[in-house]
Image 1 (cartoon, rainbow, N blue to C red):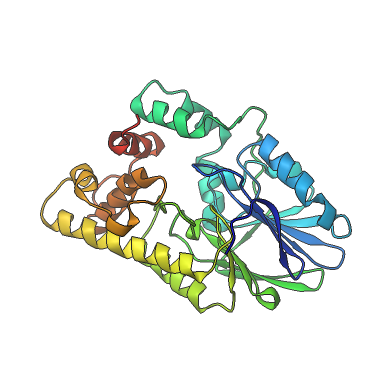
Image 2: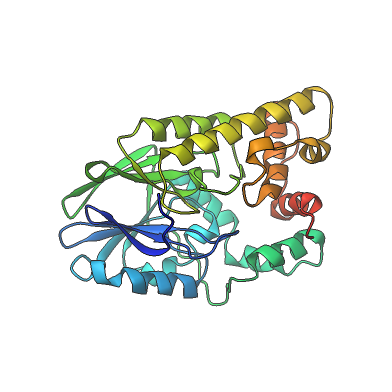
Length: 309
């Protein structure tokens, strides 16, 4: 599928907003229009980016104003722009709201101001974003497991497939259009990061996506794609889980394992330093007594394996 950025018309009244640049925090969004109303899938990492997106999506939304917003999960690059659509009903899964309460714009400002390897790494990857003026606007409506919406006559299914990437991960399926917006269950061309896990939940989410009647996949990051990207994510997760498990069984510390694993056919994926987080997640699954790392700890691990820091 050809790589397109900006506002991409997908057919059946559905649109994708595809980030014009790759890298950490450059997330996608979507618009599903019906008769007289539309649903926005996610806002972006800062107010400037979100305004640009909303301006680009304004033409299809003229006759169908945004009445509903779904935040696919609790990472800031998918909800920090909520204040610009606070007039709409904002919906998220229960786990996503828990994540939002833990890490908001204040926490990101603190992380990027730290004088440490983690802080320097965070500044490098998030330096393009401006959290000034971002006020956390949490979703008004919470759902568990699944929710079916009627958006101006268009059926939209929300399915919480988490915890996986995060504590709550919502996919947004438009059955009549054959389109699914995956949030960060799919990274197209980039390394997935398993902040939360367990891995088997993410693998099950991939299986669910592969079984949907949806030929068009809008990932959380990367270009509009197909189910092939879902298969590639699934293969990566299986590979990393097996590699990390072998090293855990051999008694190798997690960071040594992250440095030791050779990614093979996955080596060309962007943001490969996320392997450090993924290995740590596998180790916590295998030994629940291991203490979880906080945000600075996780970014510090990635800074250790990232040659440019």
